[in-house]
Image 1 (cartoon, rainbow, N blue to C red):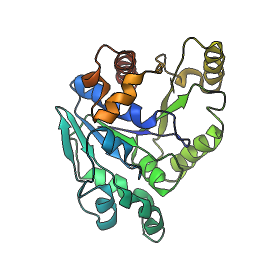
Image 2 (cartoon, rainbow, N blue to C red):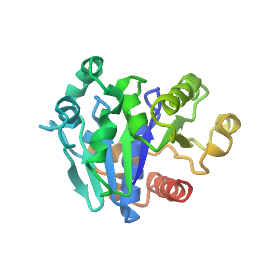
Image 3 (tube, helix red, strand yellow):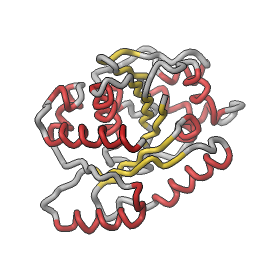
Image 4 (spheres, rainbow, N blue to C red):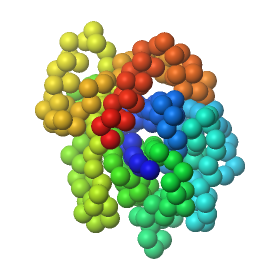
Length: 247
């Protein structure tokens, strides 16, 4: 079982869209996949058609009970989030072993899955630390903008700290660029800058701007189901294949 945290400290990078569609791509490749929404905004949960869930990951964290796994499609399951998770950061402060709660919960899952993808909040708080402690590797989506990696040093530093104190096997599995507009000259310059920063960690596949990605989430489905011939489906299929090979 490969546990992957999808993380960026900034919002709007396509993090949740990527978690959703990489997960769907893995499932389509016949990989048993579990998605975990650990973001209080619950965008991943809602993007897969679930709203106003009665039991969420918050209940598991609060009461130390089994993860509420829901089946979404063949080979694809989800642990939903809820707004209740907003209170978890404060509640975790006084808990013993607070950094390892998610890791302990995932042990009960056993080897049922080939991949577990954790959609982290766009913040570097205790929930994100839990995801990093539980994960084997990290994927970082970066938006194709000049300030894409502003503050990225802080994120890399936190990953390093978690590796030192809690999870010595944690690696940065890869970085990929989202919201690419090939017609913009600046896009090539940004890509080169990111490549210099991350070297061979940068995936070959980039995700183009594509309205089908937004529309699919509004419909509560993945892009492969909504628009299988779209650029979004093509890009995420290629990225998923690259992830399977490289990770």
